[in-house]
Amino acid sequence: FGNIQEDIMKQYFTGFFTAVCLTASAFLFMGAQNKNLGDVTVKSLKVVDDEGNDVVTLASYKLGGFIWVWNNKGSQVVELSVDGNNGGYVRANNGAGDRKVEVRAGGNDSSGGLLETFNANGEMTSYLGTSINGIGILRTFNDTGVETGYFGTSKKKDGMAVLSDRYGYTSWSASGKK
Image 1 (tube, rainbow, N blue to C red):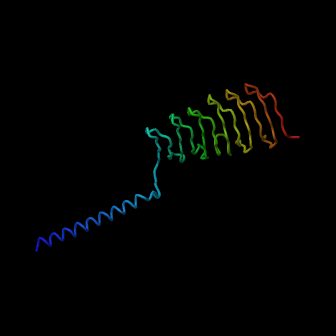
Image 2 (cartoon, rainbow, N blue to C red):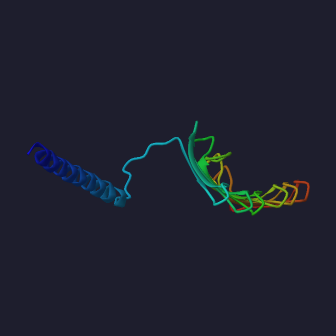
Image 3 (spheres, rainbow, N blue to C red):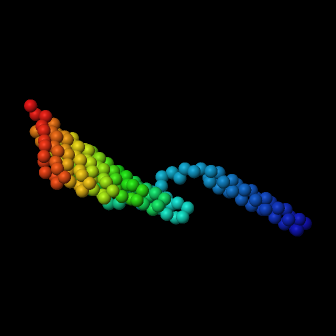
C-alpha cells in the first residue's frame, strides 16, 4: 500500500511541476512578444552593419548629445549635434567625409541661424545667415576662401551690396540709402 501511495504522490508532483514549468514558459513567451523596453538610459548607442562597422552613433558629450552617420565606405556623412555656442548644428559631408554644408543656430560669428557651404578643398564658398550684429547677410567666397561678394544690411540698417576682386579688395559697392 505504501508503494502505491508513493507512486501517486510522484505523479501528483510530476503533474504539478509540469504545470509550473508550462505556466512559467507561457509567461516568458508572452513577455517576449512585448517589444516595448520602456525607458532605456545609456550614455551611447551604436548601430553597426553586418561586418561590425559603425553606421550610426547616438551619444552624449560635454556640450550635449550628438548623432553621427557613416556611409558604407566608413566616411562620416552626417552630424547632428550641439555647437560650441550651445546652438543646434547639422553638418552634411560628401561621400569621402569632406565637409560640404553646415547649418547652425547661433554658431560661429552669428547670433542667429546660418547656412555655410564648402568646396572640395574645404574652403567656405557661401554664407547665408545672421551676423553678430543681428542683421541678415549673404557672403560669397572664391575657391581660395577670399570674400568676393556681400549682400545684406549695413550697420545703419540700410541695404548694401559689395563686390571685391580675387584678393578681397572692394571694387564696387552700393547702398540702399537715399
